[in-house]
Length: 327
Image (cartoon, rainbow, N blue to C red; front, side):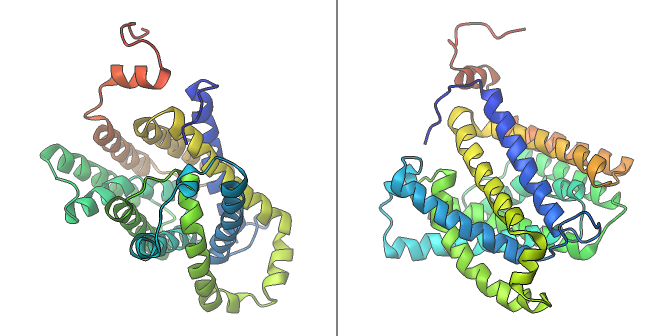
């Protein structure tokens, strides 16, 4: 679905950054058990399960009564293609969500965003190993720079918890594998909402088993009591914020480009780190800031090294290419 440019692209950029930040901070608040004012709900698998159940119902209602899911409405998916593509991708998607959420139990928001900076490069290496991407010297140079920056940032982390670090790294690997499988197995291009239409039910099914095995027994008073202690309204609003994020992503992709999305992601991470320091009291050392700056520099360099900035500006704004760029 291409979004109509009723507003300036900066409006959609702001919406996506705001929604993405709200979801991350909201999840951290729900799962946090260290502060009395937090949600004190240390069940990331159930939180992921609830999101997937919510998205399953909402996307099906939208596919039936709206035109906002063209990928789902026009899909020619067969049972064979579903088992070969959607099912394995859904398994990796489910695993990435679980491990990424588990990291919030042990690590600060700021450190998690630093670790996630290398996700595009991990994906690139997996694409190369799958024969879908060629590695060049500039690419290897940028990969080395991002890895070096993340290593320095990790070394400077004061509240380093190996368990949380391991969960986040596994989550990144699963997410990268999911993106590679999307490119290798999916023959249909899907918008973000249509993607959730196909994958949310699989994730909900798999997460339900993971929840029963790993988390349900830890709820001393049972699931209902745990939900009542947190508040049903909190869970509903949290799921709605996750849905709003997908809507914002659809609008952003429809009026900008993947390059703009990448650069917005860098800005969002910087703002989240700053907000985490102000609200959650996260400590960011000079060593961490230095390492993260190196990682962001090389990540941005990798994403923009083949960019024609003049064409990119005109494509996004829709202005005549013969008009000079503003100075």
